[in-house]
Image 1 (spheres, rainbow, N blue to C red):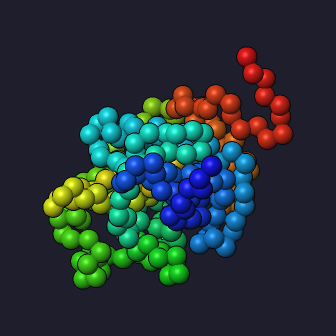
Image 2 (image 1 turned 90 degrees about the vertical axis):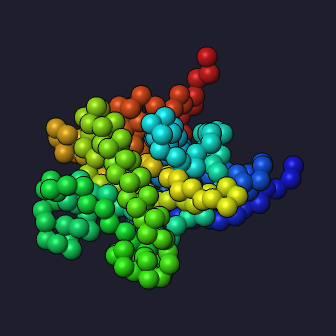
Length: 253
Ligand code: TMP
């Protein structure tokens, strides 16, 4: 069998050349990293859960008219996506204070923000993805003013969609990060939501108990990451048919 071509290996995903020009296969690994990969572990089943959850969110966004790179899920760990040029920004939307904004501005974790706050970080692991302003983005040409208007509007639409979806299953969307891709259509470019949307890139708290159901469970050693992600998948009704159960035999009906 021919070996497929690896395009890029990231911390949590590997990208392979897709079957048709303009497509990419996105493979979800079980690796979990935090603090710019200072902390690393392999958590069996995480990739399967993120693949299925990201498919669910991307399909839902498509249904409300938010463009994404998602084409279709191929199997438990892989999805076919449109190839795009990633804008070198992490776009973060915050509804409640947590994580770096709490540290930076001294706001207690869990404080509701007066309105959703959008932040941009320059995607550069060697620099630790530093926070940047629109001035930096314009001056260094990472995105145009028109792109930034579109990115802000996409980010807020994703926030409204995800917040409502999580609220319906008793989960508070504290914050999240998305990445944006450019797709060229002749002389035109379109911006789409790319990469993934999963509990790796969101903060999700149970509305009643405040229990964390996201990657902070790994970052802060709070228990089983797959239990947390499985709970999110279960509440959203997208739990995979054969949930990852390492070491256990599976009965086939
Ligand atoms: P922060 O509070 O650490 O800045 O994170 C804000 C949100 O962005 C949180 O939901 C986690 C997510 N995030 C990523 O997806 N990747 C990253 O590398 C970092 C630092 C945060």
